[in-house]
Image (cartoon, rainbow, N blue to C red; front, side, top):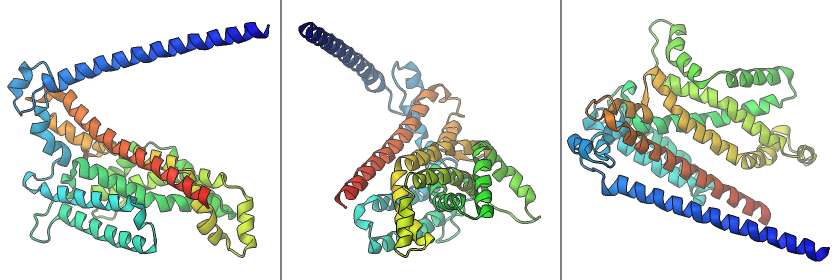
Length: 355
């Protein structure tokens, strides 16, 4: 009987092995065929020059649309001759993001450098975008668009919402009923409203409630709306991380003489924030994608700028190439953020094991 069972199990494993090998081989062949077709369509038969007539005659991709419209897609309605300004501003922000991601700056001296660097970088970025100084032409924020608008709304939304979300999470766990109920009401109210409604209220309804004669930029109203909306989700993310920490750690911290605030600052929050890195990155990616909703309030982010480019009837037929180009930008950006979050998780786990 044991021999029969052994032979049956071996036969089953052999059949599963052949089936797995067949599926793998079929997948490789299909991938090779798709890759060959893409190379033929995207490279061999493609048109790379900005020639609409050649694109209509070609059987492959029309990358000429990107060659013709890439500046409008990337920079939106910003004045053509002044587009070097958002390009320089974006480069400065990118350098600061890379420096912030390097572990060598994660110490007291490095943090001071990063704080000063971010303050200077944001000042230079908005000076370049607004103009009116250094002999630069003044550009209203309504003319901002494209990738700089997407990145800046994401950066402001996540950076400002993080501390607000932490405070809301702590408030929802507070022992004071008034504080706990107010924080809970805010979180549940905001989470029950779509972002598009928040943007509409920030752009069109909020100015009606302001005193006559007071004006505010649509960009900043929308940015504040994104911050307040994202803070509610950030609060629940942080609260989930805090709930995963054993309650005994608070008692241990208090037994060492730490106040409740010190226990949260030095014991509980560092562990909670490290535990919710995947959820934080998910919120970051969601905010990065959701900026495309600003088109409903007449702001043109990366996707909105593509729609402006497709307004040209000569190139409207090649809308698929434009969406492929924008999708590639979104994919690369999201992939880099996801990859960095995984690397950061592994680094934190290694540090925890060594400790």
